[in-house]
Image 1 (cartoon, rainbow, N blue to C red):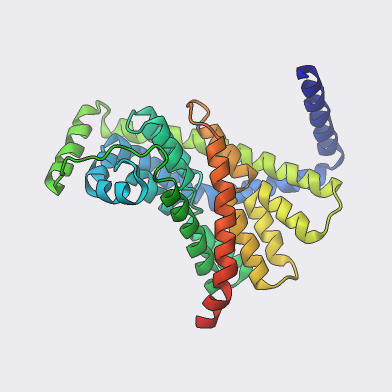
Image 2: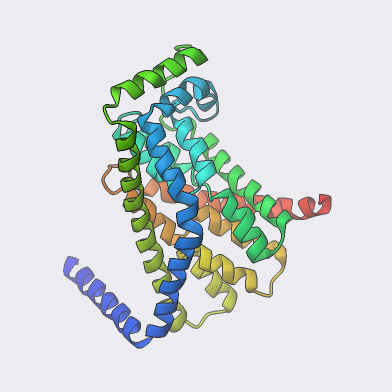
Length: 325
């Protein structure tokens, strides 16, 4: 059995290599496209937040936020207050940043394995600037559609988080923490960290660059695979665009926006792909979590549920939303 799998993998790799050699022009174009996506979208939107989040974690900001938001986090999601840092930072910065924040707090012992799995499942947010800018204005050319996509996408995550609240709920944190106490705890954490502020910045930059290079590599491989599939498969253009989107979001969403289909259908497909994340994003998250024992399967199941929930919300709300706007 194992020998058969090894032979299959070998044949697939040989086929991919053959396609790269024979279709070098289209492959090079896809690599250039991945570099442009990284340069224009991924790096500017993620690098500042990666560096900032590393510094904030070392300065004890998650503990500060735990003191302030622990009641809210436990009430809605039955999870530790320290997870508020992952939740809010993920909303601002988008995926795969949630995996990086989860990994940092898990390795630091701030959350346990079940809490890491749970928070990872419902913080898969696409960057709001990407949705409202690139998707809404550049691709769909409709600001109203972008706002509705954002609402359906985010609401789907909140529903998943609420549904998972009774799955291995965290213990109630009964200690009342005043703002003064939270600030004091953050200061104590900063004193415990023996790195100077300059060292924290350097180590945060280095760690962020390593993660971003991983993301660039995964995006490039994903786009090469979509190019090979486009060259090999002969499908309906809409199905081809959807398939591309489930492999690499940006390219797929661009192709979907160019299809001659109704805006409602475009929005449903778009929010479904954004909520699932695409093979590229999944590989990025698996790479970030590779040195932990956080399993991938619950995250995958959550993404399938997220895609279904958000697309159903779009189907129900689209006519009402555009009727009001």
